[in-house]
Image 1 (tube, one colour):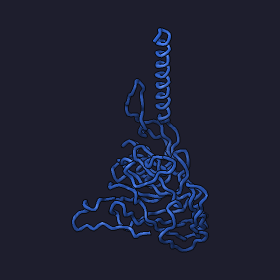
Image 2: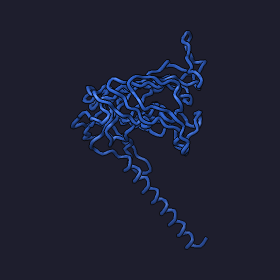
Image 3: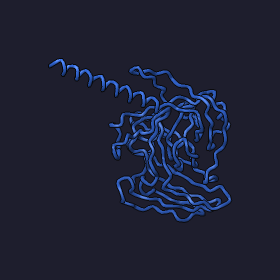
Image 4: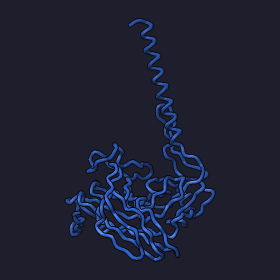
Length: 297
């Protein structure tokens, strides 16, 4: 190798190092959270984590901020965040903040949506099921307002939440477009599934509604079916029952569903209660506590 070739090689290595440092710096800056308005629901998970979340997006909340949010638990909120706690983390000479934690709050207000008065709830046939068999779950929508309401059912989504996501190659799940199963990672990791992608429900019942339907729509790999729209009269309700979570590994999870709107910048839509779901291996079943399995579709 000549002297000129050696210099060129060193320059290339230095250039690649500079590019790598620039990428890490930009990545770190992208993770920084800024004070401002954040929308969502305040919740305390089954693992004790205090979070502000909207759909699958979760942001940690400090004890100081949680004390202010507690009386608003279960309500759609607009929170003016004045400061974050940032864990100190340094890699390759670049400082990272991680996702941070909401700490300072200057104002809290209830965020009204166009679907105000729509109540969502979730119920499991059993909170403990055997791995691979799935869980029977009922999603309910009720119009508690004094006027009829038209709901875009294709915007309804289900989320599984965990505090310890398992290795994805062990999941019994064919991930479309190579998207990670636990795509939404943070204080709590989530997997989101649109209800219309679950296929035909096992059961549909209700009162005072019209327009609901399920139909196959083989337009594209990611649009295989549709629930359409439903108009629910005041006091009307719809219940749909599915079998879910067949792909999940043995662990403890939370399940909830919601009318999807967007991330923390968007006014949250209605959200159901968060319920515990334990997926267990058959040999781990406690004596006398028979595990239930969902009916076959």
